[in-house]
Length: 420
Image (cartoon, rainbow, N blue to C red; front, side, top):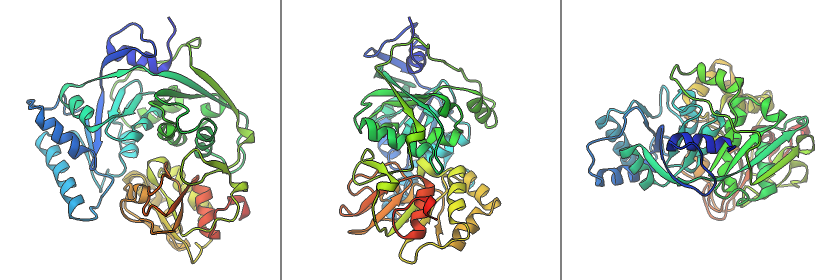
């Protein structure tokens, strides 16, 4: 019987010939991950299990990214706990600020830790990012993660699949962030609730890995369990340049049953802006009206990769950030930071009047390095704009791609790059 990509991967990991949506399965996991906020909870639960050790120290990854460098004593203690646990158990994949550190969902693909065909779970909702590699990856609670750390297994319900097909030619300044914002605006924040979003079509086939990571990352903003891309030459080239570890590629059957198929002509899509307070509250930038801003943030696990930084530099180069605006730019990981340094992008940002930070999640969750005050507005390349997401409950967050964010920094209001 035909199966989708998600079903193929889950069946293989459950040791079954076939699975169907709604089946409850027990599956082995290939990688378990957590960060400095969620790992302490998982570690506490793991210790209560009273097991002799991790199921496999090569298959547990801990990344310090939300509050690094620590913003206060409480954050420092959380980081210390995670660091001590990683040392005690001899974790092969432990990362914090420095040589290979940064945001977990940027670091782990870049370091070849997550691979096609794998089942990956993480104590972070944006674990769905790794679906860009053709993996089934999803976020779970810290207790589930603790059990997986001990046993290497999880149980879950097999999700239905919705297939999204993108055709046509992209307008100038339109990229992956705009496609996923447009899609979420179309189906809503519960439009793919506990379903797998599978992205395909000619536009996706031509998309680079950075764009695929962006789209997979935001699948959860539509309520999805996972967001997946088929493995192709682009995927294989990316992976093989980063690891020699073996992996298995799965392909969904063309005649597999999907709950829904949505088709989009991308030539009709212009740069998108998600207005407060939902990622689905989208409109074309040309219909944004005059919205003055106080802050711009370019970075995060959604748009902190080198192509995102290049796009921002293309707009900011030779121009100045508006005197009334704070522009904060944070590369997603140390690799992107070093590459941006080598290419002169950091100098471009500083000369334009922007601030450049150490790779971390930073302002995305209202953690540090750019928290918003009462009444302040920020246009951000992040993935969420819920009430109080980046600071005060009476602040406002607008989501957009790096080019729109950079143009807005220059003009002091939400703006399209074409206006420059």
